[in-house]
Image 1 (cartoon, rainbow, N blue to C red):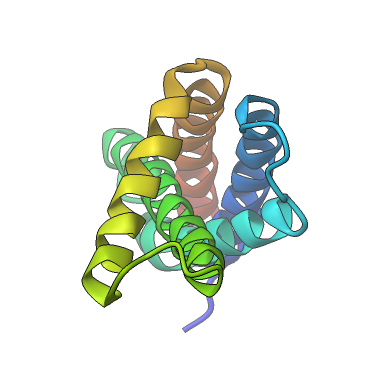
Image 2: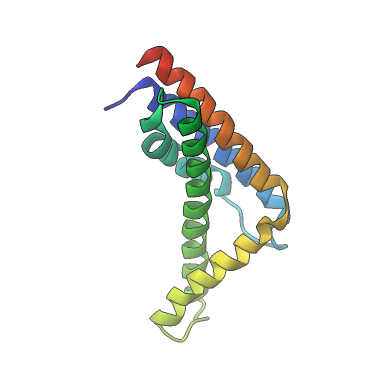
Length: 146
């Protein structure tokens, strides 16, 4: 059922995911195709905000901050998984894998490879700060309109 906290969480975390994707682009390897990277990341943020963060509006500040950080980590996980699957499919169409099991393992390798690029501190800071701020905003929205 649509509620104000779910709507605010969806919009806020879509913006957080798009900003995190924007800060992640400079650390990607040279020549990486980033056609719809921000838009897909924003879509993942929208869904995670709606389904994960949106349920916990108005339950207290500690719960909201915790849930906001969980939402940010979920955004990171789902984005890494989706883009790793996408790059695995691109590699498999070029016959870079010997079989289906190697392709599935390739997804995990790509997730680890792109996850290792998170050593650059800007993207994790955007996700953490956005998670905390998003939790506070959604909690205030839940207290006001629920």
